[in-house]
Length: 244
Image (cartoon, rainbow, N blue to C red; front, top):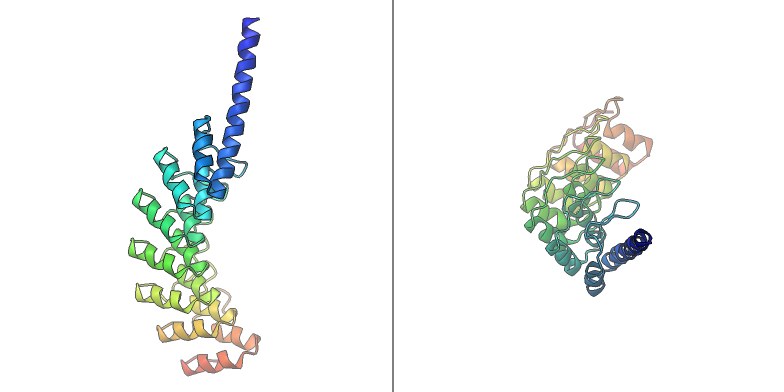
């Protein structure tokens, strides 16, 4: 009888802890600091995960909830935790442009060039999503400006593709290599031309991009410009020496 009673107590406790963990995940995502504290006091695990392996720290970092993040870190939240996509707290903060969170995580020892499952670094994500302030902060703190993801794409390539002139100019000023190639042999210029980004193309040409670079299939920026019948791009490329 005693064993049955103990077994029931254990099951009850497990249920309570499960509820506390669910409450912690929910409160962290919404940035409800007091609810986070209450859940932890009720026995929640600070590093509990949902089905996507998202921890309270990951959820609050994605949403930019600074006070919650500070508290979770004070309770030994794991900054190295990754979700199913390999996102860390710093990657999520950078992807969403949360400057205060980026600063906080770096002060607490987050690795500035950590990568997700696709090889994306915090800087690459910040550039891809046109978060200029985040790009500047990460570079200032020592991020590798020429980091490449698993497909060898760089922050400059993504900034050119997304049409972010200020981000592009900053990256170039900080040493971004204009003619780095991805796994398909494409340069930032080929990428930008292929997506019709006139301003990006102009910035890259002014920075000395090889106007006649060919990818692994032999395609040049000029070829893409002609396929799109973009006379403005064709004229600009010719001004910088592009051959037909």
